[in-house]
Image (cartoon, rainbow over the protein chains, first blue to last red):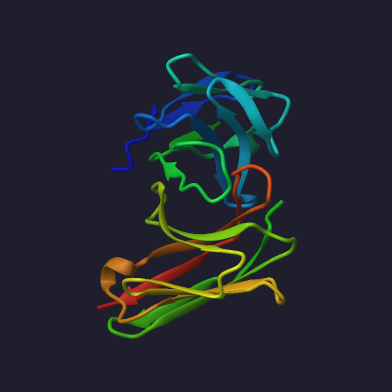
Length: 114
Length: 111
């Protein structure tokens, strides 16, 4: 158990819909990262927040947005869903945001868009 | 897009044998890490090697890094059935801690 929790574990929805994925980092960790894992794209970094502020952005679509709240939990919002958004979405956390800090991954949310 | 490639994509060995997998990357890095993923679950950090290091050991794991060739290898010695998993290399650059992952190597250790 990494100490990072993600809800829900599974999500099935239809195209065009909007969903929210939630992540609680390990106690004391200030950085939260979101990654997407799909068969065709592999593991891709989406976005990072550090102590409530956006710190780095990766291959995140404009239909996707995220935020980190004062209690440090984070939410990833996916809207106008398409079939290709079906994937495993991971959240990870680390103490700070310096290169080389170990990231602890949550169990993921498996999203299926029908 | 992914930083690099992992080779082989899949590996099948007998328990007790060694497993070696390689990772190549494209741009300069600060650190390279290896992660394990069991069957669609979350990733678990295994080991980190810094760009100024050439070799590192952790238990049955040995990692090498050749920055001139932009490549790394992970060796798992005396493999066990519990080592069956996918292994990913991940790199970070000088600024920030976002990770860029390779495509992964699926390892099957047969009892």
